[in-house]
Length: 282
Image (cartoon, rainbow, N blue to C red; front, side, top):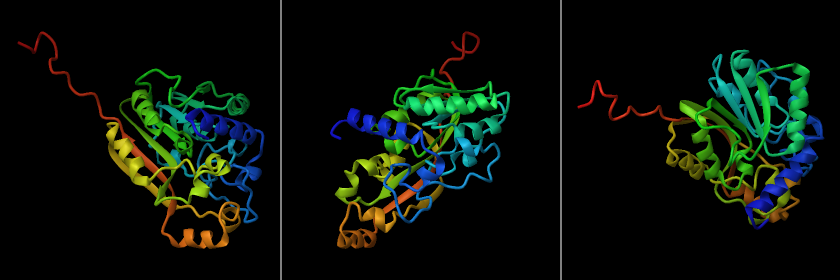
């Protein structure tokens, strides 16, 4: 795992396997990573059952928040879902934007794209599409989206700054995003940080919460707000795969935190041109 290419290949392989699994299998592991816990509960994911447009067969239990709940999607909006998986958040976004809007899901993994397209075909939605691509280089033209959502995906990408720049490019002026992600407060133990399973499981690829928010601000976004912020607790038997009993106890007492956050931010509206034309300029 020395290069960005290595990390991307690891994620692609792991999520290709996950695409063939069911939700129950994925939920009993660390964000679908396969680091199975005898303490079977949703370590990261949240309950979608109360959201309109929810389709259980498109939910692989891989998220760490409910970004569509906070995304302020309006009828007729163009929405892009980054790391769209089997289509769960895209279909909820489609319910919000209605038949007059459009939803574009982007995913890095061919197997996920295939599964999402199958789910979409069953539903017969003609205004939802899924595109295979790297969210660092989105297959979307500039100024396309009114809203961007993403659920537990940016933490898997080595070049987070590149993704945020792409989000800015693809959003329309005045558009906004609502993104759920995993961040840290304090440093994880080296053994966890470097573990491949934990990387694909949404933890070891996470960066410091403050750094994450600063990346958003330095890339030009305004009105940045935390819509949700909650702790993530790793079960003892998962920690035991990477740390001794003494190291686990030290980690739990260290104040180091793994958190799921949902962040909202807006792309500024286009500034008024300095000269509005021959009728108003000398």
